[in-house]
Length: 145
Image (cartoon, helix red, strand yellow):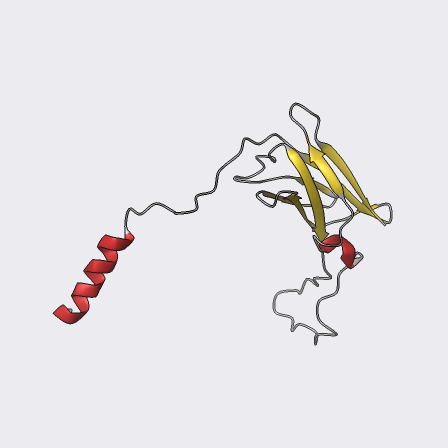
């Protein structure tokens, strides 16, 4: 049995914590399909995270590249695209080593290492600017050098 002195705060928390609206709800904007391909040194970039950060800072769409370097953007739901607008594009990937089950992992050798120039993985230094347009094809080719 729960003592009364512990029950009162639990009941108060349940009553006060339920049904409140978020004071800063996300204003969802309509999305349009958007996808593309990422290459580095003319080869498809696998397992990279591609983030489209709106210039006004209100929207972030993202996708992950497959073996062919292809990605599909998601903003509010899986592969729903991105709202119309201009975006800074950030691409990030690292040397994640797959380990066979039952085999001990090798000792770490220097930590995280980006497989691409780090300027592409920082919103302040990326030079990739793209625009998602209404009714446009919105198929992007991102060539990293």
